[in-house]
Length: 300
Image (cartoon, rainbow, N blue to C red; front, side, top):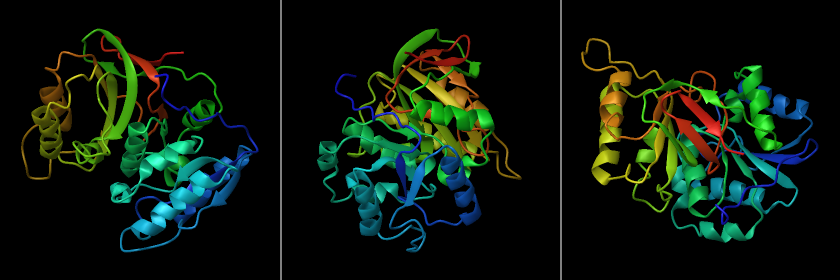
């Protein structure tokens, strides 16, 4: 933990910068609502060079999206990087790019989830923390307590535990590694994957039929990717129903089948992910997972 870089906490009045590292922006009104929340908290918000660029389904070419990210990193007045949306495209940023050179720059918060998993995981490989949290286009849909929690985290205040459904397995401590399951699975075995030893995985997904969730988790098992993982915290698996006219397991049954024999603490139904409350999860922060009581607790 001592080698990990935790970005400085924010103070109202700080400048933050908006970038689009993945999909092209569609939700303009939702973006403006998210920006207004940041402004109402006293922050100066600057739009990056590619925030409304469109290149197919991407928010600009790989070079344009890398450049927007670099501009935010290299701007000494920028204290945090806000991602507009997920979609697809973050993994493409890391081809033929000397990402570790960014380590020479002071760390700053990167905030997002879903496809932003690629950016957060790449940060983890070079020793930087980040926040798995609402993107700007989903922020205004959060309840007040979740928005307060995001700013509590960014401004250095204590985070209350999250309550879910315990599957048993006792208690464990480890470092938190949040991710969208689909995005993370496609990063396994690549330079974007951080080491998983000692991790407590926090997984969520959206729009995947149960058999596809089975396929993803089976890949983790076949690769031995769960070896060294100390616990699993499951968020929302929304729109993951059995296809109409089909039969088979529900997504909850698939999760229990593929994870229930790992002999580690597991907690489900935690309030993070798509289509509902998306409580902030800091990357690489020490946590305690209680599989009996169903609690994810942040260790001071």
